[in-house]
Structures are given as C-alpha cells and as structure tokens.
Image (cartoon, rainbow, N blue to C red):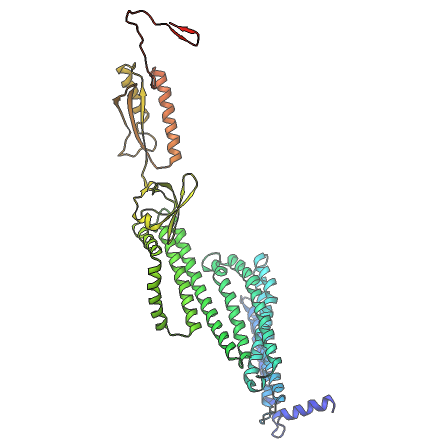
Length: 529
C-alpha cells in the first residue's frame, strides 16, 4: 500500500461521504470565504478613501490580520463539517484532532504576527528619529513572536492532552514535549523581562514622562520573574497526573508564587508612594517627619513579609486560618518573653516617633555623645559624632535619656570676656565699652528681641573684665565663626588705635633688704643688681 492509498483511507475514515457532507461543507466554506473577502474589500476601500482619517492605515492593517485568522478559521470549520460522526480509533483520532487544532492555532499565530508587524510599522512611522522607540521595535519583535508561538503551542498541546487524557497519560513523548516547550517558554519570558521591559520603560519615559509610567519597570520587573515561574509550573502540571505527590508540590508552589507576585506588586506600589512622601518630607514647607515616614516604610515591609510567610505556611501545612492564628498567639507570647529587650527597644522607637525629640539629620547630645542622627531603626539609633565615629545607642536608653537637641536651636550664643590692663583709665574703659557696643550694634544675624550685651563686670586679679554676650542666627556654625573672626579683628584694630591694651596674667615681685640697700643675685655666674 502506497502513501496515497493510506491518505485516501484516512480521508475516508475521517469524512462522511454518504450524506454529501464534503460537498455541503465545501459550498458553505466557499460562500463564507467569498463573503469575508467582499466585506474586507469594501472596508479597506472605504478606509483608503478617508485620507484624513488619522488611523485609517492602522485599521486596514489590523483588519488584514483578522482576515488571515478568518481564512484559517474557515478551513477549521470545513474540517469539522466533513468529519464523520463515528469516532475514529486511537491513534488516528489524535491525528485528525491534531490537524484540526493545528490549523486553528497556526491561524492565530499568523494573525498575531501580522498585527505585531503592523503595530511596529505604525509606531516607527509615528516616532521617526526616536532612538528609544526604534530600539524597542527592533529588540522586542522577535522576542514577542517567539513568546506567542510558544504560548499557542502550549495551548495546543494542553488541549490535545485534555481531550485525549486517557490515551496520552502513559505516553512519554507528549510529557517530554510539554516540559521542553515549557522550559523554552520560561526562557523566552525571562528574556522579555530582562531585555524587552527596559526598552518599554525607555519608550514610556520618552512619551509619558510624568505619572506612574516612569515607575513601570520598578513595579513589574521583579514580580514578572516570579510569574514566569508560575506559568512554567502551570504548564508542566498536566504531565504529573500519575504522580500524586509531585502534583501536590507543584500546586502548592503555584499558589506560593502567585501570592509572592501579588504581594511584591503591592509592595512596589506602596514603596513608590512612601518614596514620594519621603522626598516631600525633605521640603521646608511641609509638616511631615522624615523619620516617621522611614519608620512607616519599615513597618509596611515587615507586614508584607509576614503576610507572605503566613500565606506560605498556610499553603504548605494546609491548616485553616483559625488554627494558624491560635498558634501564632501562643508563639507570640513565647517570643515576647524571650525577646524582652528587643521589645523594649521597639517600643522605645515608637516613643521616639510619637514624642519626636529629634529627627534624621539633626545634631543632638545624648548619653555623652555629640553628633548628627543618621538613622532611627526598630532597635537602635545611629549617631555620627563630630569626630567621625558612628555610635549605636539602643532606643530604650534613648527614650529614657535627657536629650539636648542642638539642631533645633534658634541661634548660637557667644559669651566671652575681654581683659584690659589695670593701668587703663576710666575714660578708656568707657571708650572700650563704646567700641564693642558700636561693633555689635544691630550686628549681622541679630535677633530683634536678643540684642548684644556688653558690661564692665569684674575686677580680676590681673585685669579689668568686660563681659561680651551676643547671639547669631540662623545657627550656621561656620557663618558664626566667620562673623566672630570679623568682630575680634575690629576690636583689636580699634583698641590699638585708642591705645587700649589687652591684659594677660602678670606678676610683680618687690625684693628689699632691711637696710634699704639693693640686693645682688648671682645666677649662673651673672650678677643682677
């Protein structure tokens, strides 16, 4: 028996010629084909006449893609129409059904590929000279085409396996095809996530610079990788029908990966919202506290992680929520007893957040350490001291300690004493006071209700003391030092011009004999009279 005889017998066994099904199916299919071609011709002709219609070319091209699918659909319906009502024996039945589904799936692939080409051509025409857009089309077309082919092939194999589950459950070749196709599809989807998504992000940044479009990659990139694994597990699940333990593991992994994807996406959305609040809190015109926002960020992260772990435990153990909650209450009590210090620090951090004695970036003095707050965590507060060292103090101690918040001072105070010699006359003392008061009168950085104070207040053992007190605002330390330097130089120059001398510690010793004669001292063979 040659090949033609074999094919003829297959056709005879497949088709029912007794009731002229082949003739009727042929006439109906040809009529539908002509009708679709006529409608297509009229629609394309009408669209071409409307030259001013912005999307006329796009509509024509997309309709051409649908027309390709309709042609394959007509062939599929023709094969269904001529099919014999008597079910063929396996493996002939799977060959018949495989050909039918292959025609339908090839039509789907051809139509989608046509639409991809149309959309690529259309987007290139609308964005000539846009580098990001051109890269997107060039890079993504082949990747998307491969993904479409593998997805359609996966549905094709899945449908055959579903319709012939009894016959194919022991066939190793069909399981091998499913696994190989699933692996290839997973690799293609990973390629899409790694290569195509950044191109899409560049395209969105170019055409939609504002809004959530600029966060597209950060929101979907990670969860999509988990979802790719989920797709792979779903595709290989049907080949494990006979392996009860394996299919149970696969089902649990599918639920866990889906939960991970959803929680990850929600976490990314919340993270974007918190980040925007954090940037807003850095402005001077808001009432939000950056430290509180960072604490909220950490609490939300912990809640998402706890939710994922809770869902994973429920899936793996199969226990109801009430049982897990009861166990969680008992376990929580045990943890609370074992981690008292950690809980103290946690509640200490809450007290810091509510009382707000300081925030990140402020300079404080606490527990003998003077420095700038770097971060406030659940357990501890980190301070960068003025010497450059980092100090970590438990929040429990910080909450109970006396805190000097240097960063919130309104001004920097200078209190100094200027000493002049005892030989200075009262008039020159008054002149010295007048000079200093004139220099500090309405000085730079002076607060209206805190003018400078200058007084002759003490007779020291070796000098006359002038007290100088003034405040500088805003409390910028280096600007304060610059201003202090200017004040000191002015005082020196004006005192020198007036002949006012600064005092320094001196001692005068009077030596005299009883007879009134001078004393001769011999020091290192030198005679002093």
